[in-house]
Figure 1 (cartoon, rainbow, N blue to C red):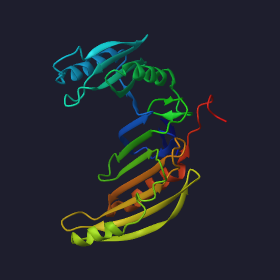
Figure 2: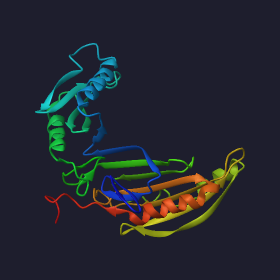
Figure 3: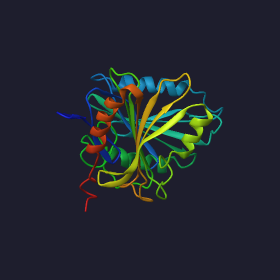
Figure 4: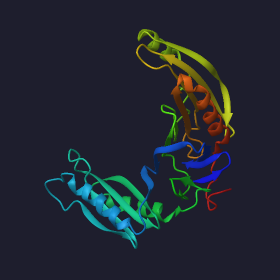
Length: 288
């Protein structure tokens, strides 16, 4: 994450954007080739402590009645790994999780595999670990760095924020590859109007029109809503439907919400994020 006079630069999946400094990251997730990838800060030299704590949680999961799981091993030099069953109701679905120390943070990768196909999963995880780069200016961003493999037809990324001092202001950015353009999500408010009316509330459309961001033709909708015994609120959405089977052009949802009396502050944050949204270039080996 880099800092500029306009805010902090954040990156998730194939896109980057600026968020005002007062917006604090509250969560994020990333998946590429159906494999979860993340980074986590640790104390200097604390990677082993992190891994020990993670193994303790895994061992606390009741294992199947037969077998040698959980099973720890070295995926490759410097990369610790474990096979385990996350849900005893499905003992033939195994989970592989790996951890690589990288200074003051760790790279964590996990994916599921059917029993008997462990070697295929290990090969893919090795490829993902090997393609990791500490920079976020190219590839598929996963927090501290990026995965530099070619785009996958199965990618998801999300990051959420909350205002440090103004309670109730939240923003969420999500991307997901689609089989066909998603033309329904955040595309109209008729159902929400009906719901609000049936609940004794009201919903007002403040804006509903096409709007481009990052060179992509999306749709922006702003609403205000009020329900009995609840604080009036506003919600802003921007939705890009995506291109079918394209990791480079997934469906995108940007959602912001706030109490109605903080609409002006949400608008300022919203404009910063949406106007700064940019696609992250592919890694050099795949570019062009």
